[in-house]
Image (cartoon, one colour):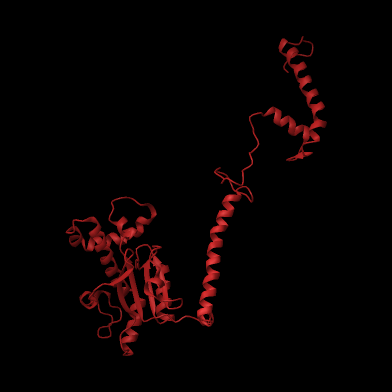
Length: 316
């Protein structure tokens, strides 16, 4: 401990060594007794080593057991059995879904024994529905249609964005493979996405998406600013947004190619036809917007029309 071999021990050494010898002797006497109550090996250490570690680190307390009657509130990595109440609640929510599913299957089968056999044979929907992801606007239910009758794409504020590959994949499959007759763009009043777009605030990542709605507000700036009531202005932007997304449908080459083919085939009506609807969650009613697509699209055919048989390759 720093002293030369022939130097006399200091007062610190004289007081320290007897204490150390007493301390170690106590551990040796206690080890057999501890062995009766403690697992012989604790995390790879002997009982004596574990006991010494406990004595040397009195501030380290064992993790208390979590009662099964109270949820775990500790910020830690959850393991099996550490939070039984949380695990039970999580599974209980899933069990409700599974139970509801079984009840639905039983009811549908009783009413129509061939229902699921028909679904298993494939789908032939007449409609492509483009709607908002809002949980209050279930596509099939508000239109009174069942499974297999409507092909659905949903996102925040029912947007038709030309760079959205998810939407484009859905549109292409619906138009080219399912040969749908109608495309419905359905907005709804009290839309959170539309409301957020009218608010001067950074909403985070979704701002890149909300910019598309703000572009609609820019196109109709004068009309919207003339509406003093904020709620009425928001409702009007919902309607204008539906109209602009319908026009965006016409701009997509997938839609144009299918409509050109339908026109050349002299179908009863050129398909797919495009419709703009708005749903009112407070009433449960769908409203059809009166949109004159012909007057809105014809002046810009020279810019957007990719399949003009009268003037192919026209330069705008």
